Length: 82
Image 1 (cartoon, rainbow, N blue to C red):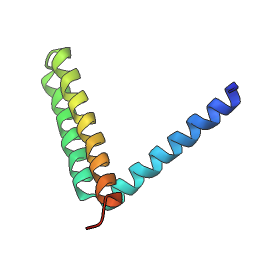
Image 2 (cartoon, rainbow, N blue to C red):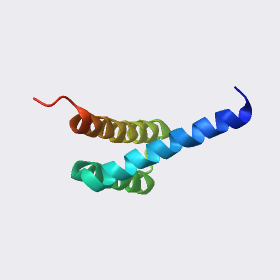
Image 3 (tube, rainbow, N blue to C red):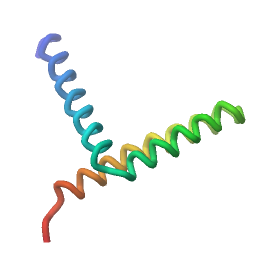
């Protein structure tokens, strides 16, 4: 695989990820709510200035929560029909 093919592959993957984010934003109220919670937490971090380790933990947990919310949405959308 050459560099040009690898760049195209990465760009395609990024486009698919962005499409998934857009779909989740449009269709999932809970995703929009968790984004709001994350933004509020990040503003609080700026105001309160806790230790860097606490900031890293809160940001990482917030991003993980958003990722899991998107995974949950994908499962709900494409999961088995009973």
